[in-house]
Length: 330
Image (cartoon, rainbow, N blue to C red; front, side, top):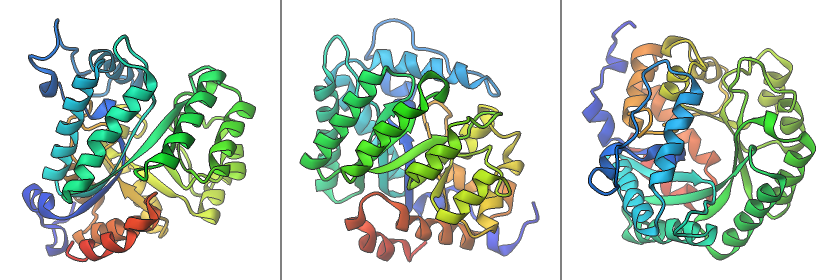
């Protein structure tokens, strides 16, 4: 990278700048240090760099098994949000699928999350919102059950602003995926959809884009702007949530310098830099911004534009004016 005055900035300086985080999984944001001394047995080992995505998913499933009580969930969630605040995040959308454990049912799991989020929102230090995840590798019954929970809690809690579709498309049918998403959309829930992360784009990618038109796309690393899918994305304009370190470490992109965010940004298509899983991938949002500067020749001005433009795609319309005012200092 050529060093110019426009892209000389330190990590500490980036931390001080107000930022938006739109793609952060609660489970993947748990750092091992949060659990030290609180759980019995050995903690799982973070996979080595360039491990397969399955190794990272397995690690996160092991973390998930450990965070199995309301008290532990509350503890790690407070730590997660505090760390985002320390990193300069002023608006945070967290996501998680409803979970049932030996010590809590799905409702208790969701309500524990919402209680922590609402306490932080009252503090005025950060705006936190929540997306319920619907997993494609769940049973059809569970997918619809989780959609119903998302609808229910969105009507009761303003901080529940949408749903996240994630998982492997190969484990469910297209018809069922579309029915679940259409039900959520009909109830006014906004949709973020993990899509096109694998080497071969799923046959369900195009129908999801055409029929659902998710407001935001997670990763979308395999969508070429010149492809049929890419042209459709450009036509209807969803924001692409780009998670640089996650994509590199799981092999979804070869390296930082070849990350697709730059290609879409240069096309003036809306993109956002996100972390995905700060705990699993040992990163922060400020670190992701710095990687964009060091490897993709983004300038600080580029990042400021990207950050402010992302406000149009947050799932809480009521927070947009406040955020635009706060982000003018970036």
